[in-house]
Image 1 (cartoon, rainbow, N blue to C red):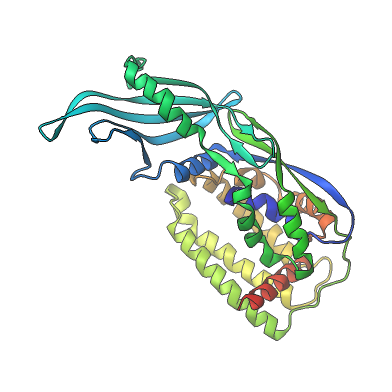
Image 2: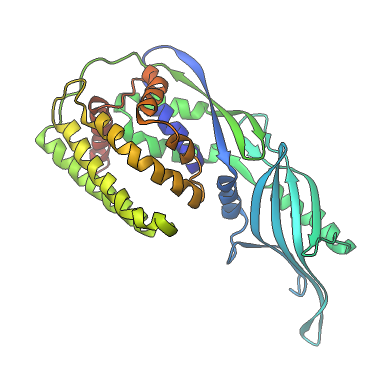
Length: 363
């Protein structure tokens, strides 16, 4: 599942089979825009994010929801939907409208975990409906329909780990050494939701999984051979082309739109720094990968902070952009050091070599 990939990438990238097993718990805040994307993909699949949740056999009566908006209300999730409802009768081969109502449906839903810890659902605890003037719905037939048909459909919103495990493994597997792949499968299979809590800003999920800690590997990874470097250059060119396309198509506006060239420039610097890190030996104080992050973060962080305010689902970037580059490296390595993760040229060689070997095995 895409919502969980950043968490798993950070914690599972260098899992190994040596060491001892333990339960690892990580709290992951899910922004409501991400939850909204799940809802739209599961239910609001009609044109313009609409969902026809009921209609009669003659298609003269129907109930449509559209334009869902999700937020927090205390410890519950609140979904606002635009409602368009019609009750009619077929006469002379044509539909005659008897009642038509447009307004807003609010559902209040409590995040709930199933007994296995695999499925997060959102059962409805309360619904309210009112027209665009704020007057409460007073049509009994429509009230019954909202309770009996619409509320259960909205309660069907689910985030199911069981449906996501294969996708998670597929995403991470290229970056994991072949000898550690079994541990990756075991860790992903052990992944569970331990607890969930909603507030006004996000849903906080506590994720747990079993892992065997990796003993520190102090052996330096060999620099890339000429053949490996050519393979990496081909991979990076493909990645850069894809990122260039994403940058060009990103729906950013205002002054930020003028910063696309800055993103491309940082991407170009990354390519140069990574290639230096892969191809040459470097002293502890002259690591091109660490230097790139330190030198580029000051110009990249303000840009990402603005992007996080404009792009749906990018709000998670905001936390990282408030951390200085040196502190960011310290925090990432503090989390990753028990697993052998390094923010360095040496660490990049290990990850890149695993990816290249994986790609070669797929061809």
